[in-house]
Length: 199
Ligand SMILES: Nc1nc2c(c(=O)[nH]1)N[C@H]1C(S)=C(S)[C@@H](COP(=O)(O)O)O[C@H]1N2
Ligand SMILES: [Mo]
Image 1 (cartoon, protein in one colour):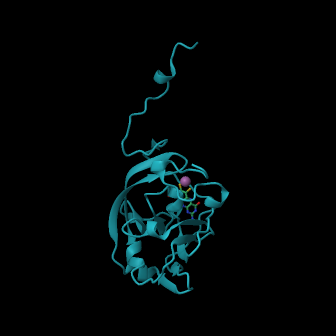
Image 2: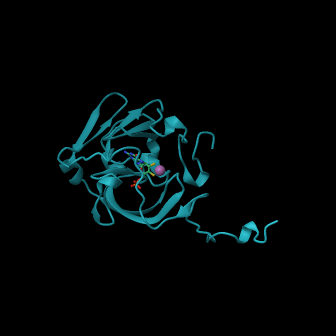
Image 3: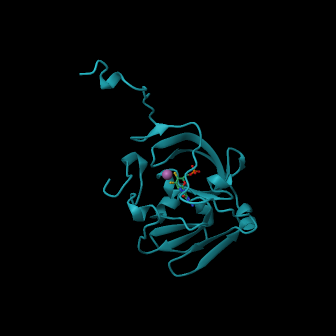
């Protein structure tokens, strides 16, 4: 039998109420990318919302940047268990982009430059819950973190926040994205610890 009982060994973790179950705090900003960083310049950047009937709504960089932006501070929770609290961003609310989009679809499949995809219910993108972020900590978004623009859906695990976002496809039937199709949870609520299929 060991002298040191489990409860007293190792580093102590202070309980942090903002931390979902199983997460730990990090101060730095890790980069997690499933492939190489696509280099998308603002003049080549385009963002398209396609509805379930095939109607396309398109914004180039100038059109995006002419829209009102919001500054918002949110907590990030990655499924690999790091959380970063109080991150400051600037971006365009998805409510602004969807103002003239007519759709009865319930699902969204988000597409990125480089081919990454992720899916979520459309309602999780609306009502002040998601942004196309263009600045982090007052600076233009680094390419590694998704620049020139990334989706941010901070109430879900961070894999839903597609970097280098290129478009959103609205669908009547849900379709799994990149991580969702290899065993990650279809919805990914960090507070319910929905990491993998069956969680
Ligand atoms: N296009 C794209 N978006 C992505 C990813 C990716 O590999 N490609 N990784 C996701 C995952 S798993 C996480 S945790 C976050 C990481 O964002 P960060 O690199 O800015 O920390 O981006 C998400 N968005
Ligand atoms: Mo992640």
